Every structure is written in structure tokens, then in C-alpha cells.
Image (tube, rainbow, N blue to C red; front, side, top):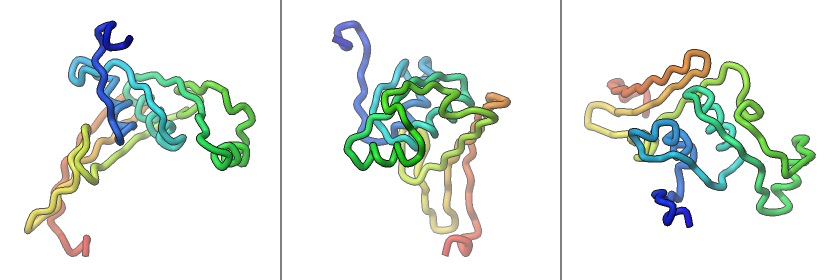
Length: 145
């Protein structure tokens, strides 16, 4: 039904946080909305990033087994069906930072060269709605031994 309505669908196996972030720039990414099931920590990280760049999120827990339900109860979650919004998951002056380890849709992975190591990082801040892309060449390889 979704495809018949004219929407493009991209299935991903990993990288749900990057998938969520890419919805905030549909002119460049072609992505308008993200649906998925991910872990609660990933939901909080995605919400923090969305706070920084003006996105929205609605989510709820989807425990896959009794252990997940017990873990939710242990941290004080009483209503397993509650819908959480952006500010429920990430309030205050949120900051989001990620560095690519392996190549992904948003960041390149660590690149090893004979005389350097290169990393790519994105840093976002909610207070200023700023996004910084940082490409770093690490020349002192003794720090990585």
C-alpha cells in the first residue's frame, strides 16, 4: 500500500540512528519518515539528535520477551504501552556525537593509512541547532598502540 501511494521504501538491517537523522533533510536524502523497531537506548540517542536538528519522534517500548518487560519494570516503567515524545526522551540542552567505526550511510568508518588514522565525527547541539562535521587525521599513531 505504501509503495502504491508513491513512497519509496529503503529497508535497512542496521543503523537505525542514522536512518532517523536522515529524515531531517529529505531534500538531500530523499527520506521523509522512519519506521522501525530498535532498542530503547537507540531511541534516546535518536531523540537527542532530533532535538538538535529540529525533528520529531513518537515511540513506545516494544518488549520482545519477559526479560525486556522485567527490565522496563526494574527502571520504573509502569505503562508499557505509553507513547513517548521527543521531550520525554531528550529534554534540556541535548548534545549528540557519533564517530564512524565502520562505513555507514552517514559517516565513513575509520581509515588506516601507513602514517595516519582518519576518523569522521558529527557533533550536534540542541541549544544552537548546530551540526558540525569533523574529519580528523590522527598522526601520532603511538596513541593507538
